[in-house]
Image (cartoon, rainbow, N blue to C red):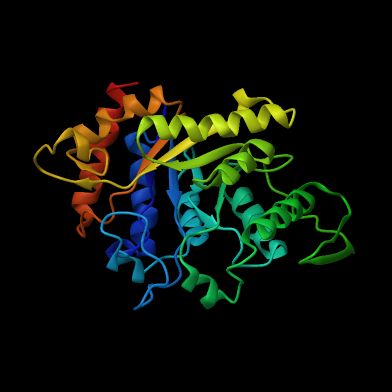
Amino acid sequence: MRIGFAVPQYGPFADPDFIREAATRLEDMGYDSLWAADRVIVPLAPSHRYPGGDGRIPEAYATFFDPLSALTLAAVGTSRVRLGTSTLNALWQPPVLLARSLASLDLISHGRLDVGLGLGWLGDEYTATGVPWRGKSPRLEETLDLLETLWSAEVVAHEGPLWTVPPCRVDLKPHQRPRPPILLAGLTAAALERVGRRADGWLGAAMPAPYLKHLWDTALRSAEKAGRDPAALRMVIRINPRITRDPVPAGEVPRAGTVAQIAGHLDALAEAGAHEVFVDVQTTTSARGELMDIAEEFVARARDRR
């Protein structure tokens, strides 16, 4: 199983010098991948509850470094690790601009980009970016169509319900051909069906193993039905633990626990079919030194379980 870490990006860690320095150190520690998330606002009266913890949006999210800028800093500070978005909201900018930004980042990183896309959970962010909350799924489908065309076609042309691109040349192509891997987030049957039908993998979250397996089986069946190879799909799981000094009851892991307990949970995720796991502990501490100490201990314990 591959082991990743969330690149420092929000709250007290939203500092470009630290992001680049931390990325270099995380690669040296032995991590396989670095991941950046996507938030734009923290509303005072949220339209939706945060899908974790007590339902309140972490205060640190109010200072959120742009994910593609964070990964650009990580790219220039590293040479080996994969760089992924988990997740980038696919709908907050026109697909033509999104395709250009992602192709540029793949070129900067010499082909190390994993494009993780999702739809988000906070309606207020759609309001703030001027994008309709309704109709997200068909908007995502057309976005994926356009990304595929922009990244691979010699002559680009598209006419759909939402966007029209006249016949043209867009010669800036990603380093990875025909395109970078596309991973899709989501926890519904429809989302997992889409993963199997047209993505390279799934961006999931730590959850009870039976439900994790149920969702993954949906993606595998969808891939087979679409005439694709289910074995080629990747499952990447995000863990957002609250790191504790003392062990917690087993039922609280992986939502909380010591570094050893969180690392121990990797066995269960591997049994459920996960190919890669990454942790985000930026809400556990506001101290840079402690963040890096946790990262170093976690990857050491994770390596011992491989």
